[in-house]
Amino acid sequence: MVGVLTTVAVLCGGLLALVNNVTQAPRDAAAENTLNTGIEQVIGGKCSVENKYEITRHINGKKQNFIVYETDKGTAIQSTDPNAFGGNLTVLVGFNDNGEILGYTILETAETPGLGAKADTWFQKVENGGKGGKACIIGLNPQNANLTVSNDGGDVDAITASTITSRAFLRAIQQAYNTYMDKGTDASTGASKQEGN
Image 1: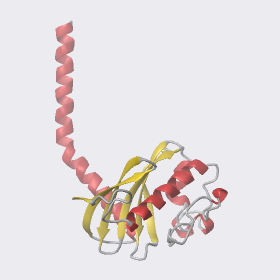
Image 2 (image 1 turned 30 degrees about the vertical axis):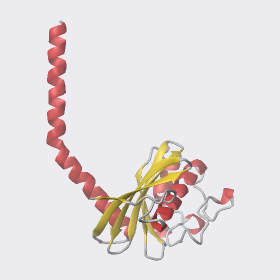
Image 3 (image 1 turned 45 degrees about the vertical axis):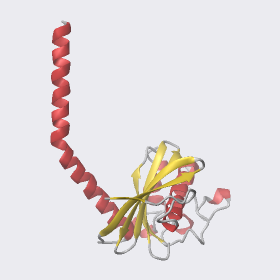
Image 4 (image 1 turned 120 degrees about the vertical axis):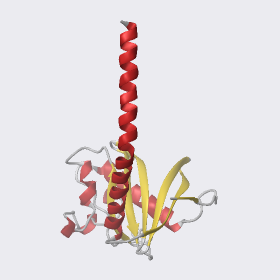
């Protein structure tokens, strides 16, 4: 009985490893395609990535990694806030050369459907299905705008019944902007950016 179970377990493990190896390339290609689509979405059209690297920053005593994509039309930065209602909330946000927000997309979220998950559209312009008005962050420059929820004295209306998610989203956007402004050096240690492709 033990021999049969061991044989079945080894065969199943081998099959899983084989399937994983066979499907790895298509999964990587799909992920790359999704990322390229996201970059074009947040930059506002077709663009080519000229440089990609990672910056490690120290925020509230913890290391956080940001991925920077420099394109021919602006800069996209991947930023994660670990304190959303459902855990990590990862955004990709685009900035023009003046630091204004061109667009954003949500890359990872575990927020409640119908509530916190609305972050993907809430902070967009009205014509993109978003809330618009005081909730819209597109076109704002975080240097001049207070990117916190209005309940905390900020300039942005929170998602209805999802203030925790809204705070996490806006922190991720602000940290992306801070990284954009600090490109090339670590904000707290002065360490050089980590080059990569």
